[in-house]
Length: 407
Ligand SMILES: Cc1ncc(COP(=O)(O)O)c(C=O)c1O
Image (cartoon, rainbow, N blue to C red; front, side, top):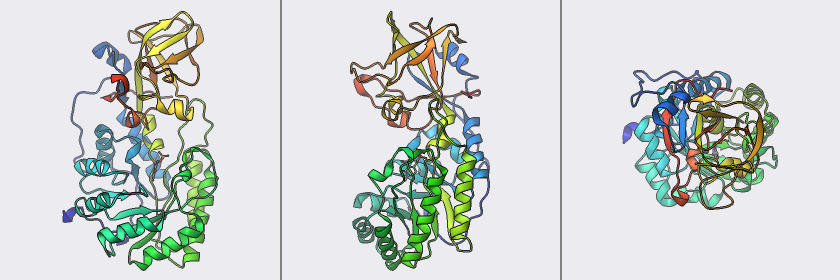
């Protein structure tokens, strides 16, 4: 698969806003006009993910024009082929992948894409197949054992990039990934030296935590990256600032994306200017969350302001439960918005498990009843991707909609 072999460091990639791929087109069933059209046409008794291509392209353009470096997509946030295809058609060329399944998926849709295998822990079999079968040439590590594993499996190869992932103690995110991954600053210095000593292209990466609420965290991480590089005496070829860019959920207070881009740009210029270092980010959540809403149906209402939905925490609503993020909602009856006086409702999911309950009350029209629908906005990330089949319920039905859930 020689055509899929990637080379790093050949040239400094130009930073361009996203452009649709030449001949990029879409196929598949016709898009629905809006959610009312879905309700009239499908009368769906199952949960439906409503994908709005325009919103995805808008978000890609925001990153493409605003982020002061290259932009990759973290496939884990939403690996739905419809979404991956739309990203590739609109010019996404670099993908952060966490598993062989994700690698295969991206190779199917975008055979020439650059793949960053940024899961810091991989089995030897995964490393071997990623390298030999799928042409992956960039791997993350956060300890020496992983570096030796990679070296034992693929040997010396000057085209391979090793991204040393480090962490700092700056909790400013809803989901702190540093409890699982990341070398300390001191360990990162040694790792970077070792990777370079083995003949690999040295790079640094970090992830400030998902739904990160502080642009200053990126500044501190970039300062630390400069210290690690200087202490190791190694010039890095790439600094990957990870994901973490936040989404304006209903209960979140988040700075604008532009503030994150400014912080990253300023720190990068201050500490890496003049070098040959590429700058990259690999967001998942902030790229795809706004492009998808989830249409759920009310299965049952009790007189005590309790409702039962056809999806819950074992389906697309897991993040509400785990991280207490609250999505904006709209309510429909027969394709019309349902309004009127409102009240707080407790909401259960469809399984027989009592934990299958949203952690906060839903503020809904008092008249809501069996058969009505609730549309949750900002559902493109970590919703269908983490959905289970518990109790025989699952929600992976995607349709395309021309007018999406815009807040
Ligand atoms: C290595 C890596 N990159 C990027 C991401 C995407 O992060 P987010 O969805 O917060 O942008 C993750 C999320 O877990 C990750 O582990």
